[in-house]
Length: 335
Image (cartoon, rainbow, N blue to C red; front, side, top):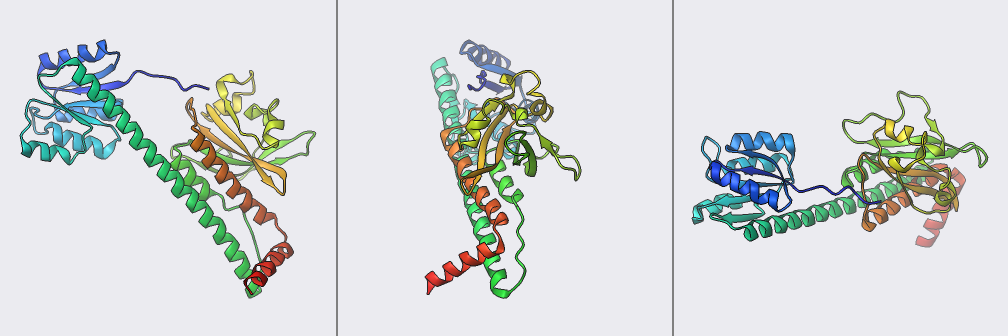
């Protein structure tokens, strides 16, 4: 599944009308989309909030109370938007002020088309690379949290056994799901259990994380059970149960099957099975509201997280005697 390609959207901030118009025509001739041309720092901040452009070309010397550097500082504090300065001034004091805002390039007036395009393409590439690195680091931290969380549950279970306290387990998956969901910029991550046997299987929601502004799949305290067909699993259910990764797009589902996903604003889902003792217990759905291509690294991170979730659920289903046996083996090995 390919993501929808879009033209790069650029905001121009320039108070010289002739220069601004020349820059707009230059960008449009190159195939870029100009989302706005504004002449003040205040207008730049407001337009950036409204349009969320992919990049901003910012004149440093603007009329009014807010110059380009101040406007860029305000925008960068609110949004992750790369800024390229356009200026006829290059004195050291101005450059030092501008450096604080971490610009992605400088274009000195008078400019030519090649200089403008090369600066834009380099800035976009650098920004995309930095964003991927930040996401990768966030995913690694989320996975580390998941491992630590799992080990903590095992440690607490062994501690309860040693003290003679009753051992109680629960899923407690929401903190792990939240860390992964935020790191991977997902819309929601529900965890389902297979119920109903092999003849009439249903998916019962047991845990869920959803991003701010979204509503839970399960309203109130009731039980939510849905047909596997709600995720397009009529034909692919065997594949999921065998341990394969399945990516579903709501736009490609048969009529009627897409209703559940569309009702909750889900367009792309990656489904991974939860396997316990070599049997498929349920599945985890990594949901996104857009048409999204997940990278191989993201899919691998999902697999690792599902393995952690499988361990957590397996621990909750383990009889106390089984944990006691594990504890005995653990301490006998230490001796």
